[in-house]
Image 1 (cartoon, rainbow, N blue to C red):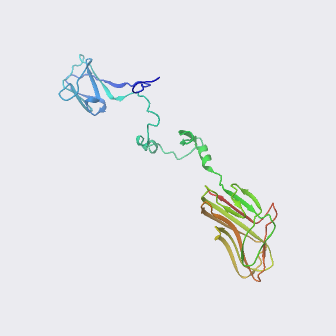
Image 2: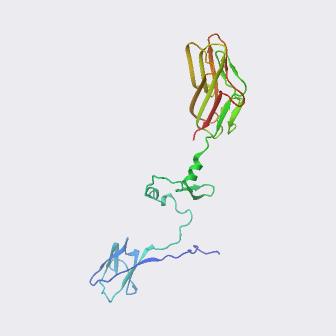
Image 3: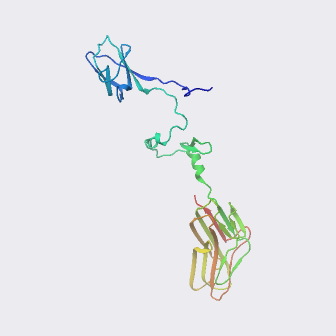
Length: 294
């Protein structure tokens, strides 16, 4: 139905009333609510509305009502209506109350709770519904828990790999055990779009056989084709490191597009090569892994 002017209210407003006990010879009475001045109340004496103002029937300020003349108990009656104090009003329109109309004490003024139960409830804003919703602590924590992806784990599985003397060689991985975002390819992990953040990386390498004594050995994780994190051994005497595993780990604040790979560098006494164990397709002591930290 259409209306001219403002739409009619869906509920009514009533105003608080105070009835006074008349005291003989008394002109000052106490109001139950503070007012700015006499215009905030309507005073009725003996069923007649009185005129407010200085030199008129009454004045008011704060909680004091002052009459221009005293009344007689048992003969006169008096009450007032607080014009500025509605007992019931129409609800405020949707979205009409903003942050400027709310006080921080809505939250900060509440009793502090130090013990959190699974079924405790928090208030959230549901963007899909554009509305406030309640959620239990258990559901909220579950929703922000995440699953540490992107994540990858690769291992050898292509047969033993020969590492030549005095050369840095990228370790070959034939078996992708985990690659959640298809971000590992050609022995390189690349941070996918939208997945910048802190990552954990770890690489392990085992020397399976050697035809020469090792003087220097380095296992490193390279970032963007540059040396980044490594574990290095330099020996004053020649060493046979057959079937010895080496592991390097690191954490990095990675950007989209950053690349990571594992490399091995060896120096031998006579220039001979070294073989690292790459195992079968089901097992290898040669592996490389990484995942995003929450």
